[in-house]
Image (cartoon, rainbow, N blue to C red; front, side, top):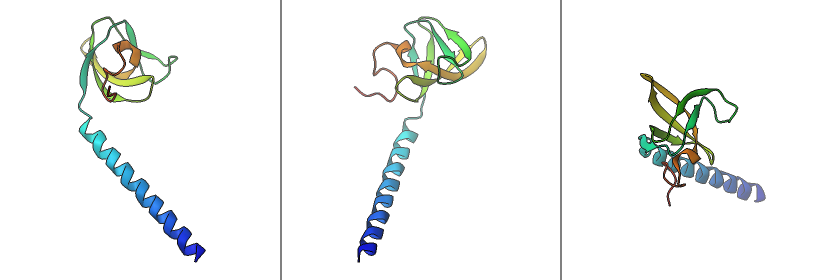
Length: 107
């Protein structure tokens, strides 16, 4: 009897986790449209999510970049046109000023 109850509990938990993940994936697909933002300070665009990563481009105050994804608490994934080329990399969230302006952060 205990085995049946434990098996039922494990399967139920797995099903609930899969359903929750599917719901989150559906929401993310709707939010994947890049959102344009202007930087408020000079910021580098890195090729990784560390301040020690290589710098792909340097933005200046007022440059427009497209935020394509909010990666974590510190970085967002961006796309920008620099010197006739499109660059995709990561920028510090603080480059955009008030927290909540970049895509994915609701006030």
